[in-house]
Each structure stands twice: as structure tokens, then as C-alpha cells.
Picture (cartoon, rainbow, N blue to C red):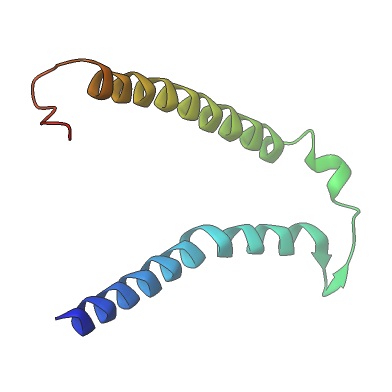
Length: 96
């Protein structure tokens, strides 16, 4: 029984890492490659114009949404955890 659990855990871990690489890291790598390489040679000519382009505005907007989501989720999770540990709400279960 434990051997199959370890196998399932390993397969799941590999699958999740493959998804991470494919959906998150590869696009970032591709964007960096397109930004810094032209005709197979390293160049930084394209970067000054990038900071005032739509790509930079998209990046700042994405960071803003991510930070706001993190703050809202952290505050909501704090109150949920506080409610579970410090009050006698229904569904809490018995504490030992």
C-alpha cells in the first residue's frame, strides 16, 4: 500500500512540475529570449523602448492585481483562521 502511495506522489509531483515549466517558466524564457536576442546575438537595444510600451504597462498592471489579490486573500484567511481558533462557531470540531 505504501509503495503505491509513493509512486502516486512521485507521478503527481512530476506532473505538477511539468505544468509549472510549461505554463509559467517557458513563456517567461521565451519573452526574455525575444527581448535580449536579435538574429542570434545578444543585444540590449530593445530594452529602453520596452519600459514605455504596452508590455511594461501590462507587467505593472499584473503585479498590481497580484499584490492586491495577495493582500485580500491574506486578510480573509486571517479572519477565517481567527474565527476557527478563537470562537465557538459551528463546524469547528472539538479541540484537543
